[in-house]
Length: 84
Image 1: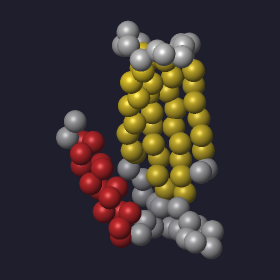
Image 2 (image 1 turned 45 degrees about the vertical axis):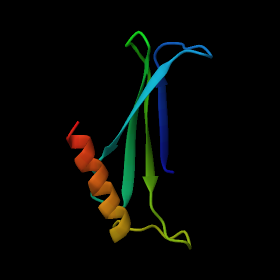
Image 3 (image 1 turned 60 degrees about the vertical axis):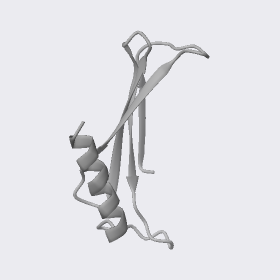
Image 4 (image 1 turned 90 degrees about the vertical axis):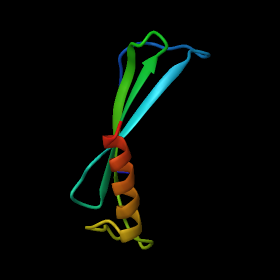
């Protein structure tokens, strides 16, 4: 992981019902950015954040393009996301 950001906007308590909405942002490199919003049962936003992940091979070498299997899965996820 390269980046982790979380902004708390409203407190929540144990047993609160929360809805977590996560989306994937389209990137040009071998990087995945997930954006997240946490919403309380009252419909008000409690927190928002994002994570950015850079892909490496098994030796830890940074990749500059997504492997075909990952690219296919990301494209399917983005297509589903756009259909919402």
